[in-house]
Image 1 (spheres, helix red, strand yellow):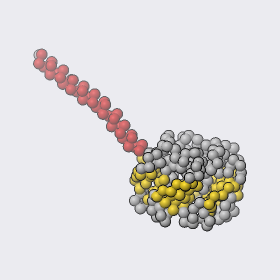
Image 2 (tube, rainbow, N blue to C red):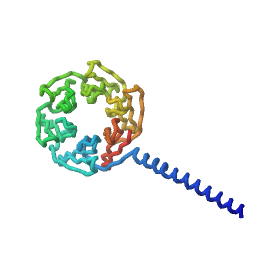
Image 3 (cartoon, one colour):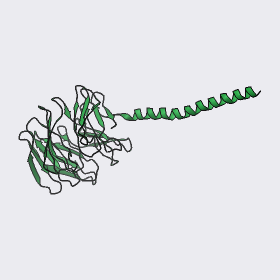
Length: 305
């Protein structure tokens, strides 16, 4: 009887131990699956012909997926706070969407620039008031940003024909100009020196070189990254609050980032030829996520950073 009793106790102890291990393993396994599920997120919004216009339309600190449809001039936004889709008609076919925070309330405003008459049309999210401003000529590239550090987006264009930036500072309503860049360059708006002001910056496809005037010191920074055919995708990828030199290569779907905190080159693979890069802070973080929008199926692919 003693031997039998000992055998039964031994069996029960082994079963209990296995159940204990299973209790530990299942949450860990589920946690890994959950991490993998969160690592890449997909969201469906838009159709071929739309223009992606991601922004913080609901003031929750996260970028919302959004598109503007030229055919009906309608904005479609999935608010990240509610996961509900809202729509707003603003603009006409031929306009260029220029979302930004023009009234300083930290909410992205619906805004377009009309090349045919050089007028900017903005709906201020804080009041619903419509604001218009004339700036630019046909052929200009709109480059809205906060050039005067007052927390509001300024009306701005870059003119390829003469390489000149024209900025109407929201703090003074005065238009300032700066010659920077040459025809063929691509303007790459960003804050590369962490002074909360947008710097004048261009990327030159012909030699893969970035040319930046740091607004804080006036120092010119030159950095080689990318090659002809790449798409510059400025963002804050390494949590030091400075924009990093970054390109996305359609031919292999690879992102190349020079982290401003370390100067090291890092790469990430996301996307395929035909995609449109749409980096942004889509979750509660201070780092930009790698993201692309695929016009062929209207899907957003977001890789958490």
